[in-house]
Image (cartoon, rainbow, N blue to C red):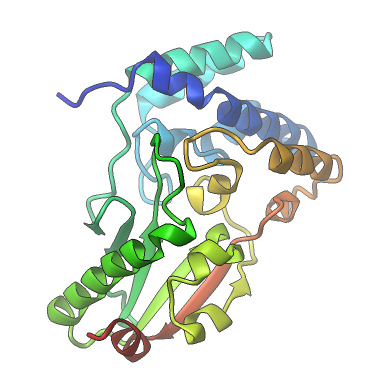
Length: 255
């Protein structure tokens, strides 16, 4: 049985949970949808609590019961207390089974029907003096990428391109890890979509798992004019989509 997180780790997430609950409240009111629906499908809770990706599965019944209990609590502080206490008992959320991890931060998916490889980055709670994207760790991260793309070249020699989609492409620390052609392709991701992945929600977290208060304040101001038809526009950093031919990555990392 996987070890639970414990209250010390769970308490770090209290601020992050509060941001998401506030967003769910605003979205429910402006979009005219039940609060439980907003919490379930438009926050990161289902994934973060290790119940899985709602883009591919139905909501877990245990999670649905938790949301029902949260909605039934009127006091915002007590809502957070329930979420924190429940989160403390949950196992860490693993990489999805269809992803291939490399080091503690990167993973890739198998090629899609267009022979494109999608890549992912994640960070978890740590006590390092600097985050994983600090300039002092660039060489370490690039070595992990070289290992990952070397694996891709061997496992799927016919791979044609590499795709990404994350708020992280707004940051220099992430972009400097990749080829210039890939960086130059950045395009805002638009169109109707649920917002329940860390590719959007991760922008509120520092590398220790605490919320970035200045980003939260900007977000709360934007929510005053939230357009329920385009809720992603309220987020301070937009998700940027990226792509480049796989040969570009071969040259970049000497594969």
